[in-house]
Amino acid sequence: MKYFYSTFAVLALSFGIATAEAADLKIGFIDAERVNRESAPAERASKQLEKEFAPRAQELQRRENQIKALQSQLEKEAMTMSESERRAKEQELARMNLDFQRMQREYREDLNLRRNQELSALFERANRIIKQIAEAEKFDLILQEAVYRSPRIDITDKVLKALSAEGK
Picture: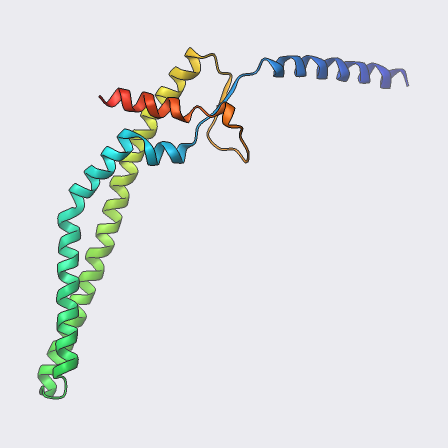
């Protein structure tokens, strides 16, 4: 029984110290999705990617239109074509479809790779700025994901402003 009381006293004392320290704890929150969507570097990267991949997107659109035109022509003229001519057009259409699907897959893979590279660079910069803010304002903990957070601890706007100022 004596052991129980001494253990209880130690736990109570520990709990009292922990709550006293928790009262001085300064916590911040960053909405990473907002940084990804709204930051000036993210917007610049998005425009750069659009510009970089526009020729390939246009080429894909051109190829898709060619396929649709050939398919339409084949449907309209299938009855009047000879068997060998119709077979040749069908084979050409199948080859064009396969090429188009390959080009489309490569386009998506390349775009995702470049987007991930840009996001990685953005989050490196954002993390550096978050650390600067944390040190300057004496934060003990800054979270990027939470089930609930009070707007009072959200420092995303500060990070967005700092990222915007850094890019100028």
